[in-house]
Length: 367
Ligand SMILES: *Cc1c(COP(=O)(O)O)cnc(C)c1O
Image (cartoon, rainbow, N blue to C red):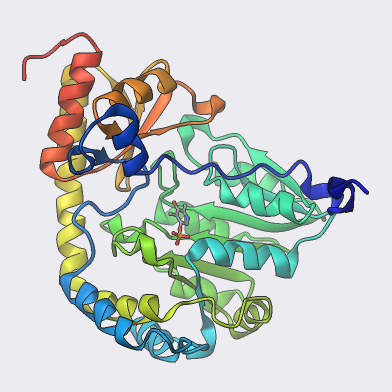
């Protein structure tokens, strides 16, 4: 019997997530020393994790033969006291991506509709399709989420609205007023997943605690992969009502948050000086990139996060030209094919990107 015919038929058309090439592969292909390659493709923190966190993570390796704490109690306690929530209102995930999938497992099945922006983070659509539910993609004027249009698209079949702010890959954020409006007008049968992956980069992030207190159907997601610099460890969390979190807990694997990740994340959370420094450096890095791009004559989407979407004409072509020069960036899908996403790097890395882009666009400026 044909193996494919044994599979759940709706997964046969499921797109496979294709990650960017790792540094080592690019180094080998273009014959460039790996330590000269600049990776600005995945919105990682170019300054790395807090040194305290790294020290803590290393020390855990001594006991790595032991299973992790399956309830993640220390990390959960640290998060709960940061937000002044009960520990039953928090769930840990193998990256916040896992929690997006847990939401799908709990709430979605065939016939359900899921609303998100047409250029929103790609994983919402993947988990929707995975469960055989129907994605409803909403137009994003100026590449920003149109919350009014999102609410207008709600039907009796709508189960979840996903809202990332700032959004990846556009870098656009909704105002706090817009987000409060959405929360206040959310229909009673709809779940709102507010994805806060880049919230630490905002000067005035929305205060989401009032959302989850007023509505048990709202869940907020955070990650240690971005400003905390722990992308390689795979750790994130969600917070919401006790009812919401207890449903999500049912569908996760027993040891989904590994031991090194738990210990490192606790130390990372406690080092808010590091987070604040990274936020300040990111703001200067964004400014440096914006000024360089303006000099070259390249337009970009104003970003509230740690990456910037640049209008380059043929995104794939410029991606390839940069890659040959040892700079890895992120080309976009065909809908955003004229753009290229570049993460904010260190001052030196940003300088090199601007230099390379200037070369590619025929040396319009003298650097
Ligand atoms: C990076 C990112 C996440 C989190 O990724 P994890 O590494 O799985 O925690 C979630 N949402 C958005 C919009 C992101 O860009």
